[in-house]
Image (tube, rainbow, N blue to C red):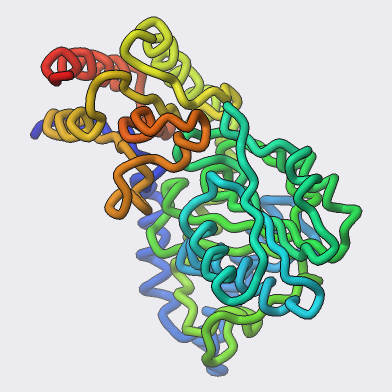
Length: 378
């Protein structure tokens, strides 16, 4: 196959060659264990701490700490379980939303089995959590709210600023945000967020790199025991090269965020215009224009799984469900939460862009989409 058009960047993105080269160089030079007290170990440790400082500086955070993880899933688990278990004596009620990533929803369900009370907020027709529904859900025993910034399937942006401002009046409640699809892409105010998670491979970094960033005052219970690395919150020898590469790719994403946003917006607008012009065949599920990186739509009368496979055979990569749960479920619970239409939820297509994509690729995608739709039976 001569050419590949990759439009599944919300699942994972192609590694930036500059970041990969940096990783390789650091791996060879700073190979010593950063916990070792000899000179080479201390050199590794200094680079590790410099990487933390760089991340906090890039995000303009002054009262926080960085806990390096293997990705956003581990970071979400550490934030949610860690806070719930460490603060159980203050309350046992936790709040999240119906469209969260599986690493959040399944963590809440696990805590529910262990005696915590869980409230799962609905979303409106745009896939957004409304602040009023959160107000109604908060109780005297609420200790944690976890709401994602940008939805990984439809790209809806939640009102993180408004939620954070409302929760300020409840000092017992920690506010955690899954920033995986937002960091380095869209602006999300972080001043009233107590903890947030992200992963490197969504912004052209390396798989296996991620972080939980939290206010220093937030107390967590470690989820794995060991040598006490990462301020006793994530034991295990830190991979210095992964942590340093995460800081580097975040810097590149932040430095080029505005120009990348503008470029991707052009691609998004072109595709959405086509989908709206063909509303007899497609239902647009991504209604938030403020996030151009994800376009989700449903097929009205055709099977999305057949379309995605046919596109793949022609060298065009999109997804029908989030890669994190597509093997376990055959419908999108996120799209179902929007319209409660199981047929549309079964037949979703997600196109997710990066700065690597071009308008020519989008036009080629539309051309092949039209061709395949004519071939697929009702």
